[in-house]
Length: 370
Image (tube, rainbow, N blue to C red; front, side, top):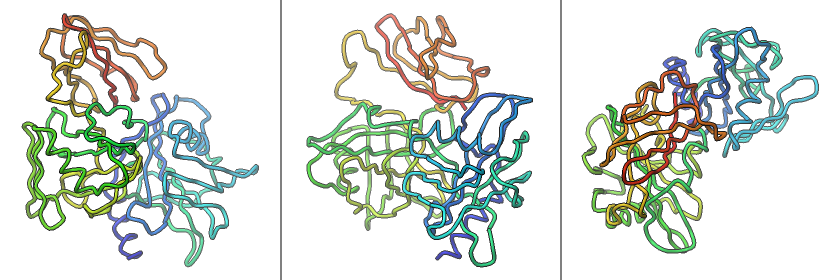
């Protein structure tokens, strides 16, 4: 099994480019990629993070790791006073110095060609790849490989769910990702409330029974088809509904079992595609279709695509009067008037909030700029 994982991750690493990185931190015109390979025998042992930094700066490998840790609450690291990397944790992955092994450090021009370097004090070069890999045993240190682009736990949280189904003290988030092409949203999230435990299958059936826009077909403990509004995906020879569990957006783990027991705070997700398809990505909060417009003065709208690279489109029943773009520290960075098409090409990558005002009211939505 372990040899299979190494082969599988090596294959993905050879196909992995800077364009595949989803989680970017920092600011500036220069880029560097951080690869963290825990080599812990799991189905998701290694991740890639992106880093932006200013030209002519003196940023180092260590500065990049620190920037990731500052941006992701579930990523921590520790290094010695003389610069040796000691500990890294990322959600359920924990690798500590000397228990039972040590971290090695690498750098190179591509994901598949990195070589041992002199440690995290190495200066960053534009476009270069930097990696850390756990273990010196056997034939010596092994080059880090990549299984997934890292996600951020802050991209979507349980507080962002709008449609809660059921009653009870416990809460779980359910994410369905059609992984489709096109500009419209294809990933959605619901919340379920319950007492005790609930299986993933029971949670899915509860949502489908309540939300008249959602239909889920299950056979032999596997999802065979899901329809939500205009989106439909059905099991075929090349694609299937893959299932995951976790505790946040950055913590998805393949489980392939609808009998997975949900407990308070545990998430369940499913994504349609082949073996290399993405894990459930940033969802749009599903809306309670029985509730209509929530409160007087609050309107419902859809902003897509999300994440967005250039043009963001707003879809709402009423004419848009103006839209304000606010960054993560509360500063207004853009204002648009009388348009549903927002050109965000010149915005830096990161998390933003958009406030849409129409003649009937206003609402706020979180977006990701790639």
